[in-house]
Image (cartoon, rainbow, N blue to C red):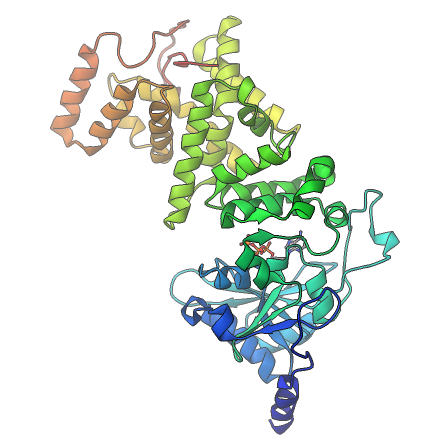
Length: 469
Ligand code: ATP
Ligand code: MG
């Protein structure tokens, strides 16, 4: 106990002198009156983790994106902790602690409380591998970096200055090694070190820079922005799964539309997702398709900003819809019946996607369900609508239909009809069915090619895409 106390006092004695930030030496120590972090935004569990580590005589800080968000007055969505304790030492201190990763181990400390369990990710200070020839791919990409280091080294291997700050909840001090606080004040995003070299080490950093620009509304510093145009192609060296995760983060950031514009401005969208090529190339895309994707991303952003959940499958279904419509129409023109043409178009659209960033299987089935449901909304006879409304993915399919209506790609009276149908009691629904029957020509376009089969419940009704581009 006494030893712990002495260690703690010693540790508190600042090894780091108050000095201005520079890239090699001591950090700037930023007091509460300057950083103004609201303690209410802190995760109690993250604070517990730093306290426990500190009580045991280690250094421990909240780090990275959480500090950035706290300084910006935003509640971080997750908390990372950095420490000089090794993963094994960390693990010993917590009951629910798991070592994750093979080459570079981190520890997940889990807390169970009300609601979802919270995982605090604890990493040991790591060094940047200078002169690490054997760790670099030919392009300069880091293949692995598993060397423990000092806090200063840990700060230097991070990406942006605003992501390289450390917060000690017990002293309420921010340690700032690379001028992150000044950059926040200047609303600037700056890559630590030589930006071109940092992008070569890890091309994902280009996508991250653009994502944070969209999220914060900050401007990329010129030296950080300029190399992206030339180095953007290095993104293709990044393993698919990692690229997928990053694109997903970008789309789920709550600022996806702004981020997509950022990708376009930086020339980074080509080859990430064929769908991004498609929608970002304004000339190659119809007005409706642009409008549809814009609306979809806007509504996703709004949902995320208001704390609602968003399904990635739904999002990818919207982004690939213009491509799907194009293929669907082409297949019909080539003589296929409507529904087989749709299913063929789904295969083609997804197969084309695999040339760029592979959409993981779990999202693929959601996308297919949402798409396959679309023609079924047009079949407003017999028991069809009553059955459709019971299907487990109905809500997603219906939301998707409403987007199509809002974009002018589907007749809005069809969306309105379904909205009323959902809200009505049995008698009201019967009335709506009667009105649909009387509607001349219906809300759907006339099927272009009919091949009557005995209708099966799960077979989408026969109708052609309203408008394809
Ligand atoms: P958010 O979680 O809000 O998306 P974040 O900055 O916390 O943003 P994480 O992926 O959680 O992003 O990473 C945590 C921290 O790790 C970052 O703040 C940054 O310091 C560092 N980091 C993450 N990815 C990289 C990278 N590719 N290169 C260098 N440092 C990185
Ligand atoms: Mg984070």
